[in-house]
Image 1 (cartoon, helix red, strand yellow):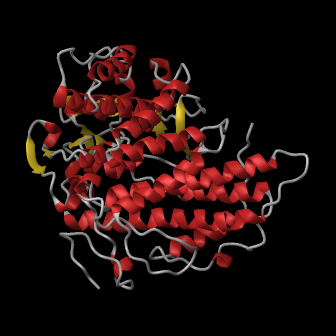
Image 2 (tube, one colour; image 1 turned 135 degrees about the vertical axis):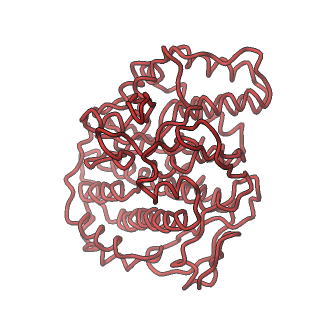
Image 3 (spheres, helix red, strand yellow; image 1 turned 45 degrees about the vertical axis):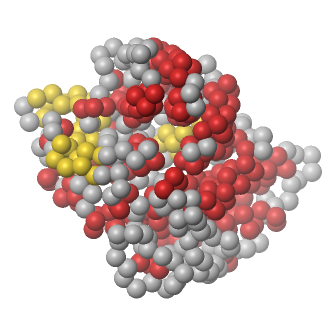
Length: 462
């Protein structure tokens, strides 16, 4: 069993430097730690742990921008959240700056570790060589995850133009001033990282490490983003064939929100801090936002008591977000932040089956899962575009509040209603061609790098 290493001085040094950075250009690696310090498997694993801890968690904010929530009677008490929900330019710009920096700082720490890995010497008579290979694969997967998030946030959807400006690909640790690579080039770069990682046999015993299956999952996600339905389907099916029996059951779903490691998770980040607490205004009065009524589950669905938290607010019982929010309200420990789930692979497979004309298989795959949860299946007569939309709707219900639905809305060019209080009506609609779907490049990047361009619709403040 792989034990979680003790965080050493590398983490403190790394956090101090990255917190003071203002762009993707970071100080030389000797300012992170002694360049000769990473020479053992234990020290390499410790530095990798710091990379995991640097990964940012904006699932709540992405859910706010997506279709997951609706305002409550308390929303006006947090103007910043309300403005973000309403897609105000200023608030998206502020979030975009924070997110850009956080992901690139994680990438920078991965690059520092990658530079030092050749110095790690495997001890004779041990399995250190396999552990070095695992660390190498994990750092590639983590870096690929960061780049994929950045690409989907700051670049247009793939089908809007593969040659459009994507994101900045770093080629070294330290100063460099590259232009934004095209969406296609960025996609190829991420695919290369993940393909290399997926070739390494790596099956950690705990959820907090990125496995070989996690790399395969991200390949499925990447090909879905790129519209390569056949490839996405193949990767998703590979995962479903390897899924443990507990992964897609009602009992397994309940275990996703428990603090113990669980084989039914593909990957989850460890956390020892509060998570998702920002949605709550007050324990007695309720939350700033409630679940979108369109994403509520039917009675008898085994996920309903976990996804939804009923609470008296403004004279009626409202359905607030469950999951982590429910854990917080009940005083339960949150030890893992679910990032990759077998249910995600199932919905990728179902969508791509539907898009490639295999509608009966797509419908059966989703309905088997819905039946296992005690949910209403998709009607046998639903087909064509309506079937794809039905699958995506079920996926949105499954992942409500987890920060993933926004990406599907952008990828599928779906209009996004901004709901009024309790979601009883639409206050406004974000159109599929709205420029704000592609977040602004922070001024810290293009102000000193004339090769970096700004996305259409956003101001340039050089």
